[in-house]
Picture (spheres, rainbow, N blue to C red):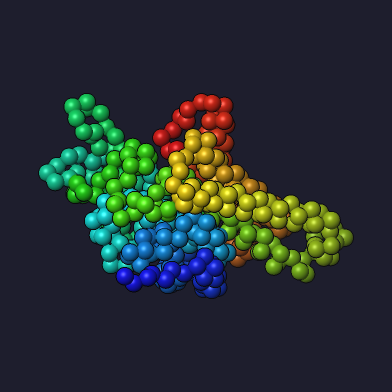
Amino acid sequence: MDVIQLPSRTELVEGAARIVPALRENVAWGETNRRLHDDTVEALTEAGIFRLMQPTRYGGFAAGARTTVDVLSEIALGDPAAAWVGGVGAITSFMTSLLPDEVQDEVFGDGTARLCGTLSPTGMAVPVDGGLMLNGKWAFISGARHATWQVIVAVAPAPGPSGEFWPILTVVPMSELGLVDDWDTSGLRATGSVSTVAENVFVPGNRVLPLPLVLAEQYASAANATSPVFRTPLLPTASALSIGPVWGIARAAQREFLDRLPGRKITYTGYENQHEAPLTHLQVAEGSLLVDEVGFHSRAVADLVDGKGAGGSAWSALERARARASMGRAVRLAKAAVDTFGEASGGSSIYSSVPIQRLVRDIAAVNLHGLMHPNTNDELYGRVLCGLAPNTLYF
């Protein structure tokens, strides 16, 4: 049997760093056109970003959470929107890897798969001969314009005579979905997170996995069953895979501020050089320490996911809640870091040509994400710490 030689974490991070200059060239275009430039998508593809969390038997890297965090943080130094789309691709690749192996063959088999999707069950699927008929609309589908498949969650009748419904997980080719050009936002504009629509789309039965089974880690893949990367629970794994771009946005704000600092003065003061002002020293120290703290929490949740996956041990309720809490804390700290550098950047930073204003808008958008909002995750963590059961399925 041939031994698959996978790139190391260092090699993948270095590969991401090499495309940062190319990503920066297309940031303004992405902001204006509300999607990633085709050259950006090509650069991400060549660097293997869409293969980070795909199984190795299809040419993927099965890189795990920590490597994915480090790589996407690096990508965000060039273009946060590109990193965000890469993170969504990693999460949905992981979700697809939980489906039956023959479905993975269909999705990943040709080696060109780019995934998008959401956990929101805003569609309805009804039983028909051989599968389900799907109708619905899904918003915030980052990277939809460049994806080949979408991971979809919809509501379907549960088996048996109860008349109840439950959410199901499936995948649908993008060629069978419509796009709604409704993405015109203040932040993460270049992610192209348009809505997608299904109108009487047939979904074969073998592509369907009930979401309650997914959340209980009763996955359908035999080939991935013993993989340390693909046997971890969905929500902690998604929490880890989503946080790399957030850390990268904070790092980018620090870099942009320091790069712009030489020669700047503080208007209407005696400081001809901003870097000499004690206020600036305090702001840079505060922002930089916050960036370090974002990195701590980002790597903490990633290392927790990778460690538990390697050991194969069961997850406690507290560990699951802490994974989401660490994600939320990283988002809160990243916003504080970016805002600190933004507030220190002066009135000229509001020009669209100055990157810090875009980073402020991007991190504000992340902070409002339903699963990433710091308050939501803090409440869940505190609830479990107080001995109560979680009040959400997304756990």
